[in-house]
Length: 456
Image: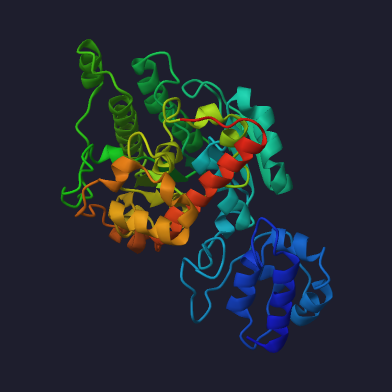
């Protein structure tokens, strides 16, 4: 890197040190990537960086050094000679997608369920690529979601879709190049298990059919590890790519009759039967390029536009909502059930869904049904030691059952396909845990400050 480039980066770091995007943000990543003794084309930088740099004293030096004017549309970013890692430890956020071709998505894309934890992360990563997003939410959440996502300006449009089975997606799909479908009814939201199954299965098919009729061929689908297995025990063998959970509508009905009607079984049936139906549709329409991402519990920081747990803490309780972070919250509660012992970073799940849109075609890489997890399954003792060492003030709060949990847990998720097909290298589990814990502590602080603290 030239001296001038380092000066520019230092000034940006100082100017943005308290900004959401972190020190230097993606601007710093791109400057480092492309400025090794050469002039940097400002078009390689992101639109939100250009907006922010216009507000800094560094703007004249940046433009003098780069010798070009900004343009408002994303263009092809050539891979540098020495490509940086997918995850750049030097920055607060993953340095993602730098070697991907996104010009074919220049018209934007549609993302379902953007008000949720994962949905908001997906939008965050897409906007960081200079892409436009049209997101869907239920009408009841429309006003609040628009307010939350206004931080992205005109890059994000929010539209209402209520009936997943019958709704028209004409507005949501108008003019877009691709769809990421991750909205799914959570157990307990629908009046009956049968209605939940219909919403999951027919709801997924509804948007897929309408997208195909609109000429959209690129589709990423958020499924779950639960479609592979219900067994995540500590000594189970590695999952195979062709495994499916054996569950039917009849299983759900029979369990209800035997008073075994539980949320996990309903959720397993929803996700498994919906994903099977989606793949059957794709088999009948081979011109569609579908990538399904099958992850487990996902943890990590809260994205900027995700406001639900901050505004309504009762909705974050695992007794009310089926949320990964809600379950992981128990790690900081001495009494009660232990947290999940297998997880993946939520940013990796969002990355995988985005990367799936530009993955090689199935004709070259095979069916893109991709398992995703951390690259290691840490023992409870390792997680506890990490928190005790890095966040010693929380040591007294660690869950007692978790402290007594068995060790020798075996990893059972092979990320080989995620690496081969998507080029995705998972974020280290240590960062996932610490970022999740920090997010939960901040959440508690905000609850306490607003008088909303809820004891689970």
